[in-house]
Length: 169
Image (cartoon, rainbow, N blue to C red; front, side, top):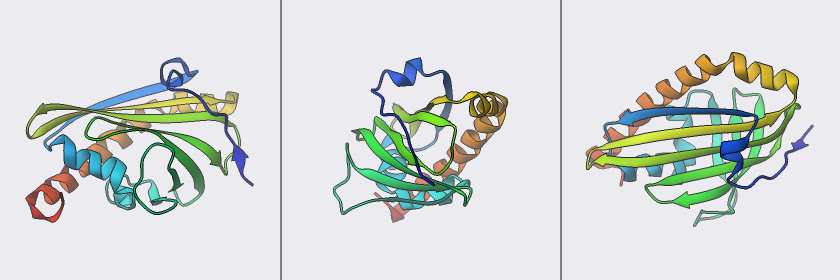
């Protein structure tokens, strides 16, 4: 069964009933980091372990308005729409459909801040409006979410280092 989620404007990232923000510093330039996060969704399973399948719907070019399919933990399937695509700076999306009950609205944003030519600050924000059970589950999972983010950014850093070393951008 598919559940349709409520659309929100960018202000939801600051006003959602549940919000979590995680930060990291990567030893990689902002360009390759943005490419891995936004332009190469097929690589998400390489750096974000819970992801099994991530891909855009439709041919390139991709950007604001593009729909993306995302499968998480082999069980959760979602369709997301890109809401911000600012190369090397910001990438955001909101979930439109999910096969899991209890979520009313969900939006995520990745913000990149070049610190030097070879270092990038990464800030990820998760914003959710959900029923009581999912809200409680999210609150109880804060540490786990943070660990997932830290592990993912470490893997992302390694992937970006490999791409800068000659295989990518």
